[in-house]
Image (cartoon, rainbow, N blue to C red):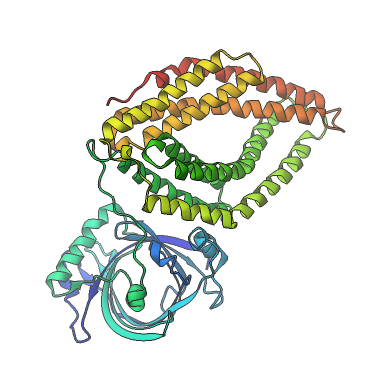
Length: 509
C-alpha cells in the first residue's frame, strides 16, 4: 500500500456501557443503514517524551485490525477536520520515513516512542442517503487503554463517533455533520468533550495546546493583532513546506524560502511593535536559513534558464557538447546545495530557530506601539515601506550603468517584496486598498526578479566562457550572454513603465 492522504470530519459522543444504540434510520437524510461490521483494533500511539506532537494537535499511530490497518498520521486541517496520511504497516517500532519526514519540524530531533496502546472493539454502521451513496459512518467503540507515560495505567470507556465518508468532506458537508450531531444529541447522545481517544488515555499528562487564541483584528483593536495572526499562518505554512523539502517535492525549496522571506519581511516591517533585540535575532537566523535554501533554488532557476536559452539557439550556434556539460555541472551543484539544505534542516541551530519563532508568537515581546489603533498604526508602517521603495527607486535610476545599477535595482526588488508582505499582513484591516498595494508591489517584484535572474545568468555565462577547455563553447556562451544582457535591459524598461503605480499607492489612516 502506497502512502495516501485524506481529510476527515468527525464528531464524538460519550456513551455509557449500557446505553442502547440510537435509531440511525430515523436521522434526517438517512434512507438506509448498512449491516454492522465488527472489528478488533489495536492502535499503538507514538510521540516524544515531551509530547511535542500532541501539543500541536498531531497524532501518530500504528493500527492493526480493521480495513485501514497501517500507520496513520493526523495533522490539523481546519476546525473539526484533520488531514490523515496513511502508510503501510511495516515494522512495529519503526516509523515509516515518509511519515517521520513530515513531523521532524515538530519533534526537532527528539526520538519518538510508544506512549499508549488502545484496544478497541468496534461496531461500524454505514449511513446511506436517498441516492444510495454512503454519507457517513457511525461507530460504537468499547475501548481499553494503557498509558506508558510514567507509571503505566489502564482504563476503559465507551464512545460513539460519526465520521463523514471520505468523499463527503467538502465545506458544504458541515451542514450534514451538524444535522447528524444535532439529531443524535436529541436521541440522548452527549457530544464528547474528549479531543481524542489518546487524550483520554493520557489523562492529566495530556499537554495543553500550543495554539494561542487571539481576538479578531479590527480598525480600533491592537495594531499587533493582524500582524501576529499573519505570522502564525506563515510559520505554520513554513513547517508544512519543511516536510515537502524533506520528501523532495517539486518546487518545495522555493516555497519554503518564500515563506521564510514573508516572515522576515513582516518582522522587519512591523519591528516597531516588538522588542528590537528579539526581532533582530529572528531576522538574522531567518536570513541565514533562506540563504542556505537559496543556494539550491538559485542553481535550480539558473539551470532551467540556461537550458531553455541553449535549446532556443539555432543548432549552428551551439558549438561543442554544451548541453551535456551544463547538465553535469548544474546537477553536481544542485546535489551539493541540497546536501547543505538537508544538513541545515537537521541541525540544532534550525530546531532552535523554530523554538524561538513559536516562543515569539506565544509570548510576543511587545512595545507600547503594539496596542495602538490598528488602522492608523499599520497604515503608517506600510506607507513607510512604500517610502523606502521610492527612495531605492530613485537611487537605482541615478546609478551608473553596470554592476552598481544592477545591485541598486535588486535593492528595489527587495523593497517591493517587503512592501508586498507588509500590505498582505493587514488585509483584514485595510481590505481592497491593501490588496491593490500588495498586487502592485508583487508586479515590481516579479519584473525585477526576471532582471536579477538575467544578471546572475550573465555572471555565470562569463565564468563558463572563460573556463579552461571550453574554447569551442566560448562563442556560444558569448551569444547567450548578449541575449541575457538584452533581456535585462528589457525588464528594466518594463519596470519603468509598470512600476509607477506601486510607488504612488498609499493606505489611508
